[in-house]
Every structure is written in structure tokens, then in C-alpha cells.
Amino acid sequence: VQLVESGGGLVQAGGSLRLSCAASGSIFSINSMGWYRQAPGKQRELVAAITSDGSTNYADSVKGRFTISRDNAKNTVYLQMNSLKPEDTAVYYCNADVPVGGTNRNWRYWGQGTQVTVSS
Image (cartoon, rainbow, N blue to C red; front, side):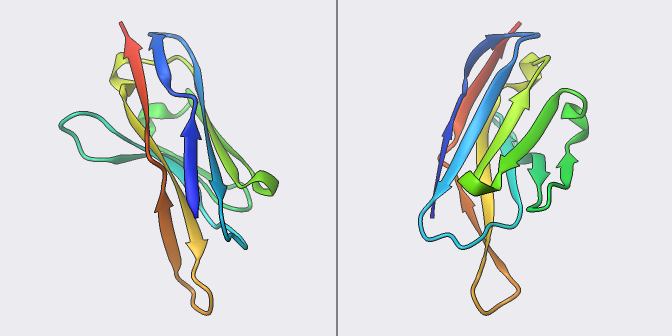
């Protein structure tokens, strides 16, 4: 399974970006998908997650500004980021939790990361 992210870049504060992450490979189904971010000198943190039935979860710092969505037919997850702030600057990673056959566990796959830089 491979995850390929796109959509990062440089934007001014108050601007918007849309990240995409497409999963490919031998995939029968995907449970939760999500986005994490890691700023220099900080730990990776959850930004948003979405289950296969569309339930969502957001970090408090992005609620009301970011929206996560997914297209199950395309195995793709999106992150619409509005009202961006300099503190949103980080490398953003997507993840996909794929069921392990014959078990009730998931294997988490990660994308390579995409840089988001917000200038003040």
C-alpha cells in the first residue's frame, strides 16, 4: 500500500490550501484515514481523522478552520485548510489504517509528507 500526498505549498496567513492523499496497492478496505503534522522541534500531532462511515475528529487548534473528507471509491482523503495561521506551518502526513486479514487489527500506512508553510 502506498500513500501519495499532494497540495502543500506556501501561502499567506488567512489563505487556504487543500491537501490530497491517494492510497494505492492491494487494498480491500480502509478503516480510518487522517492527517498528522509535525513542526520543527515538535512531536507529530493529530490534525484530523475520518472513519469509513464519515465520522470525523479534529484537533482543537483547527476546529472551524479545517475540514477532512474522503472518497472511498478513490481511496483518497482530503484536508481543506482555511484561515491558515503561521502556527499551522509543518510537514503534513496522511495515514490509512488497513485491516489485517483474519484479525481485528489494523496496519497503519503513512504518506511521505508534504510541506505547508504559512507566512505572516
